[in-house]
Image 1 (tube, rainbow, N blue to C red):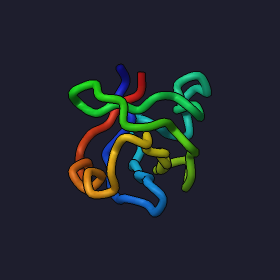
Image 2 (image 1 turned 120 degrees about the vertical axis):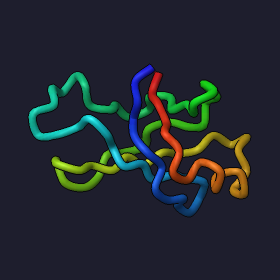
Image 3 (image 1 turned 90 degrees about the vertical axis):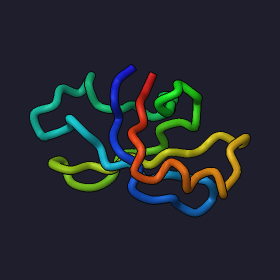
Image 4 (image 1 turned 135 degrees about the vertical axis):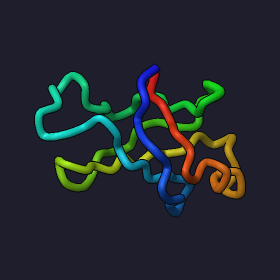
Length: 86
C-alpha cells in the first residue's frame, strides 16, 4: 500500500477530494496515481477508485469516485483521514 493523501472534502455524487502527498514536479511518472487504482482506508477497506488528478504540479488533488456500497452519510467519516492506493 502507498499513501495517497488526506481527504479534504466530500464532493457531490459520492466523491471525495484528496490532497496528494509525496507528489511534486520531480516525481517520476510511474509514481503518480493512475486512474482506476483502488483506494482503501486505514483498515484496508476499498472505498473507491482514483477518478482524476487536478490542480498544480506542486500540490495536486486527487478525485475519488466512491464505491456504491458507501452511503453519502458515511463519507463524512473520511474527512481528514489518510487514504491509500493498492
